[in-house]
Image (cartoon, rainbow, N blue to C red; front, side, top):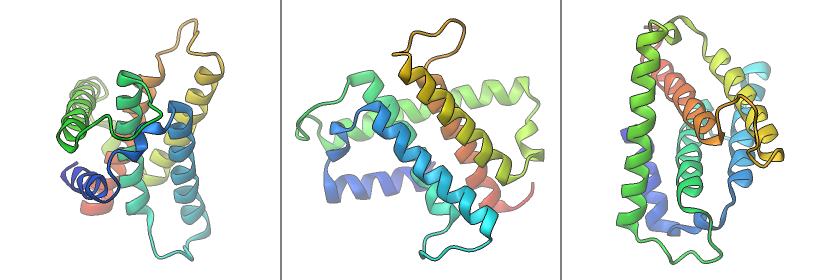
Length: 171
């Protein structure tokens, strides 16, 4: 998460909070693009663009957090409504909430993620994206499902698991 946050902070320096104009559905699509690229690389075994799976998982983590911020604050038509400190504070708040959820689920699921393949995280992220798109098409009016925020947190945590395994190998 420190690596993801560091990249977020650098991009915040370079671009400001330009992402504030993105609606949650656009963020869902950005996550979809990144997860689709990971699956493509996993399936084909090669990438023509010199950015691998790792950078895409980092992007998924950061877009999921941005999605949570946007759900919390709403999107805006201007990009000057949030300072760097406010953006980093919002980032930290949502990263902490997702980490807390991950710890609870790790307890209940007995850390089953450790026995999973990275490709399974990719597939689960894609499934969560399609669920999120369906919830978005229903304007959040679900009968029994968790909301978009819960899906963003799960997506982020699956991406973190992928990053852990890419960094440390099979644990």
